[in-house]
Image 1 (spheres, rainbow, N blue to C red):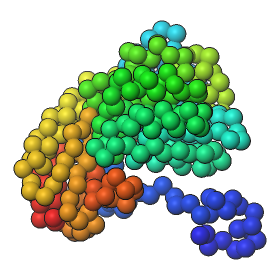
Image 2: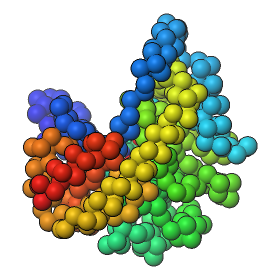
Image 3: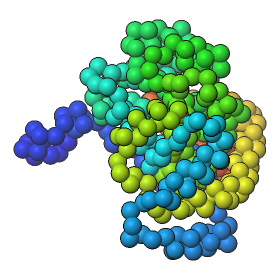
Length: 358
Ligand code: PMP
């Protein structure tokens, strides 16, 4: 509970006072492989060019037409079909909050498979909506029957399908997705945060259904610090959701940095290709570690099960490598750690630390 004086505690939401803040682990001095960041920095030359671009931005004005330029650039980058519109968020986290804000309360429900990305539940709680998490199967596949039953029972305003999912790193069965989309009475949001590492995207199917939105972010592409997320959908639908967006939610500096990155998309795409190759090597090495079970990944993370997650997590940290201990997030994740795919060097350090900490 909060440490507020009674006078304030009485006035602020008690459910919020009972919540935990989104946790960011301290990482100073550690090999940081806990948050699915792209480990590659820009070359010194590109970094300098970026600095010049940012230096020329008029920061005295509110964000204006540069955001339209960014939307147009993202439209091209994501190969969004004609007739679809795009809105920007300060990271996709903000889009998730805005979507919850746009739901008709009271009584609205958000449904998502669990374990999944925590912001779906958190945004529901903050907006006073109900969140229904539907357990995955023990091998982390969608439980289609349970999803359809939850949709039938709760008639959710939003169904989230992270494609690929966090922290299990897998894509869902496409036929199951299609049946879930057809059964959903409200919005279905395909969250493609990990699209740069995935073998499939929903983008070529987005035209099929008017109630499907596709959410993307530049975070995993290599701009986690810049905070640009975007939501793609039919114009009429985006126009409504856009009404809850706080004015000027994306900074001119962020927009300029994102535009710069998109002009150099080939650099980031090469980094993503390198990380996909590293992921393959990492999975091969993990398969040879006795006592470690690793799952296939379509993202820049690998979920592993070890004999004792708390011991291994602490041991790895002691050896200078920070990963994410997800073992208490959900019963299906018992003894699991989530490893972000890093550079070849970082992955070698991570594997050595993991092996020594089992
Ligand atoms: N969706 C999923 C599935 C995620 O895992 C994350 C972040 N880890 C996000 C969305 C949020 O991304 P951002 O706010 O950085 O765009």
